[in-house]
Amino acid sequence: MAMPSEPDLSQIEVFEELSAAERMQLEHRLSSMTVPRGTLLIREGEEADALYIVVSGRFAVIRDGEASIIAEIGVGQPIGEIAFFGGGRRTANVRAQRDSIVLVLTRADFAELAGQLPSIWQSVAKALATRLARTTIGRCVDRYAAPQTIAVCRAGAGPVSPQFIAGLREYFAGARDTLILDHGRAVDAIKADETFATSAETGWFNDLERRYRRIFYVCDHELTAWSEKALRQADHVLLIGEAAVTESAARTPNALERVVTSLHDSCNVRLVLLHSKRDAVAGTPLWLDPRRWIDAHHHLVLGDKSDFGRLMRFIDGEALGLVACGGGALTAAHIGMYQALLEAGYTFDIMGGTSGGAAMTAAFALGVSPADIDQLTHDIFVKRKAMGRWTWPRYSLLDQEVFEAALVEHFSCEDVRDLWTPYFAVATNLSRNTVEIIRSGPLWAAVRASSAIPALLPPMYTPEGEMLVDGCLIENVPLAAMRKIKTGPNVVLDLQVPNVGTRYNGDVALPSRLGLIGGMLWPGLAKSWPKAPGPQAVLMRSLMRETQDIAADLLPGDRLLSFAVPTDASLLDWSRHSELRWAAYEFARDALAAER
Image 1 (tube, rainbow, N blue to C red):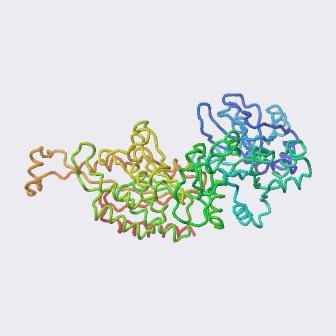
Image 2 (cartoon, rainbow, N blue to C red):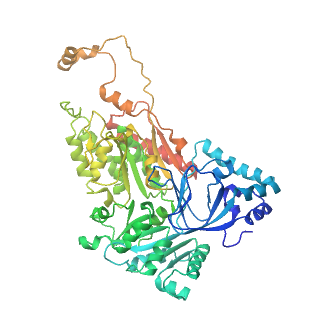
Image 3 (cartoon, rainbow, N blue to C red):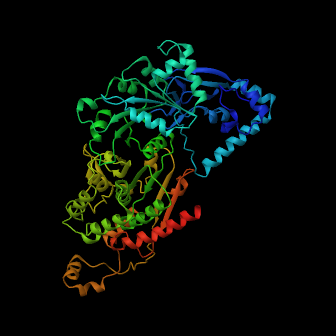
């Protein structure tokens, strides 16, 4: 059996098929190695001459030439096992994100052990084959290591709110695997000097990580030896600020935050803004703009356990996302599917969509009820005819003014970052031919950019002057965009758009320009025109062609609701929004009930 200071090999996938005797033999050949923060444990392209298992600490996986982290590896997880057992070269770099300890198995030791116990190869091969089979059928494994150690640090000039620490203790009351530790309690426990740098003190911290699944280190107000130790020991950092603070000096990053930027990747830092009650939020950009190195922020009401729960789900990689596809007028179906999800007890931590899906999830994130969203849809698209007003085709075919006025009225949040529920919209950046994930700026503008159907509506532009159009050109179902923002399960709202099915007589000539003008002046002449779709319908059909295999992209824990749109429904006919809503509601209600 593994010693308490070592991971249990039976819990590591590649070794789970080994017998107890084989695992014991393997443990005897493992040696311990300390890896300082920032050290490259593995270099891309090198021979895989060793396998590593994390005892304490955290590692980031990064490919040459790429800035973003593609995976994180935590306590009890192996590093480099595929290349090690496959005899290949390393496919990525692995860097220690903090001071860490690993167990090492060299190729020579494993070869000697396999010579004595030939069955070990069969066990390892079986485990690797299982993993390969999952990858082959399209289920890529979402590798995320939930942080074990979390530093709590003040943001700006104010202190960390005692109410926040009290709320944290209340949330984890009764959880014996969680420890919340401040300077005073650490000194009392160690009963040593306050440098927190001796080998005995380092051993004490490592021992804590063996005994607790999660540890919060509460930093001092100033940059003391304890604060620095807490930040260096942490896998993750929470910067705590008071949302109501208005003075610019009080929001300026402090000395502790500057240490955070030097020690931690942005993906491991979160800003938490505290509120006394759940009112309309304003001023979030004033906190985030001086901290552009922060990828994630959260609004939290003190004393609200549900907000603490959402924060912890994001940290643990378990936040539930809602992803909604585009589809013109057909996206009214999202209203019904969302209503069924709410009735089934779903609570979403983050939402986002493309085109019409971006508009619907924006309304959901605002907290608008499904019934009211249905009425807003009628007001914007049926009553005001926001997508039915032609204009002189200098910049677009449709007049955008009514549409934009309606969006400004109904999506009045000044900045996406002020929303209580995190939100994003997906557009296509034609200047760079890439996906644009919009997470800041006026909410109406995010929806408008994501819905800028090429030619029908004018593009939107970024502050840098880059051109944005409808996101459906590249990513109509923005599941990949969601995964760039957070790890964890998602519910995907998709639409099965029926094939047109109509056959047209290509031998009949279309009317000339004069013929078209005549038909507009004397409608009786138009009766002889051939039956063929107009430019709007052709464009929308072209944009909605199926290019994504969403089912193949799902991970364990994801849920797909794919509504089969009635064959006579139109991408441009908004008058049937209520009919689509209720049909999709019944579909989702029945699908969710079947899961119970």
